[in-house]
Length: 199
Image (tube, rainbow, N blue to C red; front, side, top):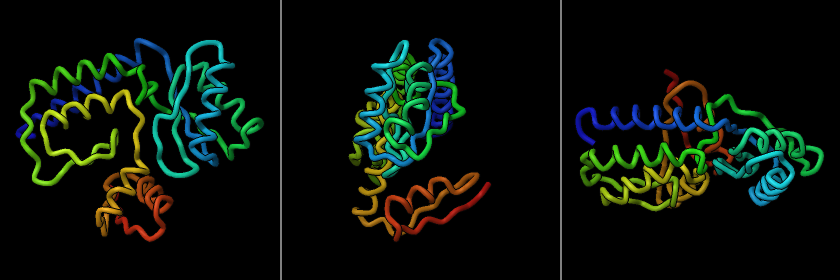
């Protein structure tokens, strides 16, 4: 991306996601202490038992830590049944505006797709690994497609980190407040080296 193209896309993405969240009440929660298969089962049970809507895994962070996303009723049901029925260690409701990485964000994905179509994207010097399909992309159209699809698709964080490590990643850097990402990276691979710069 050249010039302010990236900043404009970030602004469009944020505003579109907020509008989608405002249009339909939804929620997210973090489920700790279960495998992804068990969280899938938990989501299916919560979707069946809730008053309306559904819930699904939205972020595959690392083994034992998965974010779920869906209707308020379904996420509330996840929080209600996770410990007694599925033996989760805990469920933490996330302070976010909506059900990100699900079909709740479809209107935002369409808006972003239109913005991406109008934004020049040069061929990257190094491949961009998408956390949607865990594939390296060098084609501008493929990058546009996965950026839009990312709004409605689960984040494959654990598989993405494993792909980077298997591809020879020697050291990574987390920039921002806290050490959440480096902590997750250690859960993916205890030997992974991750530096932190708090800003």
